[in-house]
Image (tube, rainbow, N blue to C red):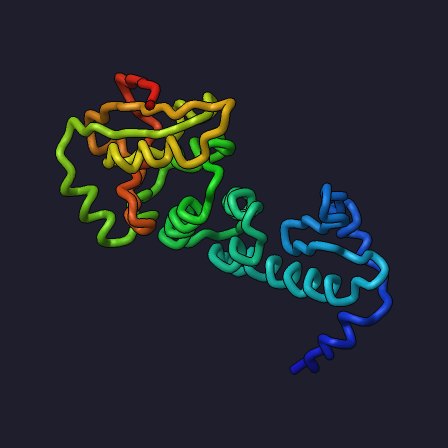
Length: 231
């Protein structure tokens, strides 16, 4: 077993930042220099005293390579920093030599639940949900049971405050929840809107998630959409 490094010594050692990380350093207004790498993020990065950051990067890089080789989709994704986990999911799908499909679809659901900018990555998510496979595994048992219990045609709602969010993939069974989403991030440049749509068949639903205390419907097939501006 390899000896664990002295973390305090690493944090204080003079060592230049790994050249592989240098392209990921950026100047952030009011914060200074930041490292924004898919595996390691660090505020106030000191590129001349980077032994600890370098160590973390190498450790995670080796772990990511092993996870990809082993087909361990969960480890592969969660070793990545949060903003890069969708891209990690896509990379795993494209590069893994073997994939445990139930575990892959579970990871799809977990990454979806963990994401806060679904509409900004709409094309990527449409491709993921449009792939063949047992998408029901993206849901847990309670979510699958609730989806099976729904009656169709089904009315769904979506609240939004930006035009880029009008035809998103995330809807809800709750009109009140949709209105809350529409109003939560309002600014003087955006007004709250409510979209109402109809789903005619259970196959129009890619997934239903209740884990965040919401009855969230994931769909690429919203039909007969009506829009209204909220007061």
